[in-house]
Length: 173
Image (cartoon, rainbow, N blue to C red):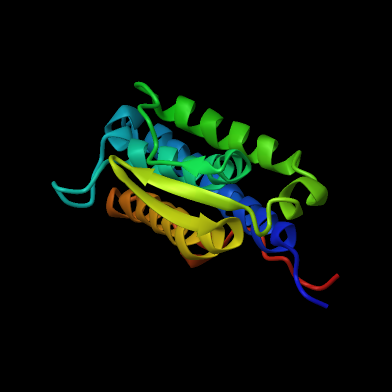
């Protein structure tokens, strides 16, 4: 039996968003136990020319909830300015994103399959069908930004391991 777009996307987004929520919680606990201000983590970068943790978390949410909303609208672009979110604000954004995705029904997501959509970057439009957009553009960006957020926390001494990144596995009952 073929997998549906919902089955491919929603559980995958939720698994990693759960992991992101978990490693952000560990980051906050690390700051509290070490007497560090979590605001420093919000602006932490792996390297000077990469964007900070704040942008990585916003992008994780944008390339999951935002990607599905863009697929429904037929248009998606880079994330806009999410404002000056503090650490707790980033955690709230992830929680809101998870809640919104959990509410999507299979009929809503599967109904997007085959629909044309555009990724607009400035004056450039990249044409996709929704499933190719999700699988070849949204997922790679989603996982890139999740991994980068994880790496920023690890580089700042937050005690994380691979299991923290994997999140809750969807194993056979």
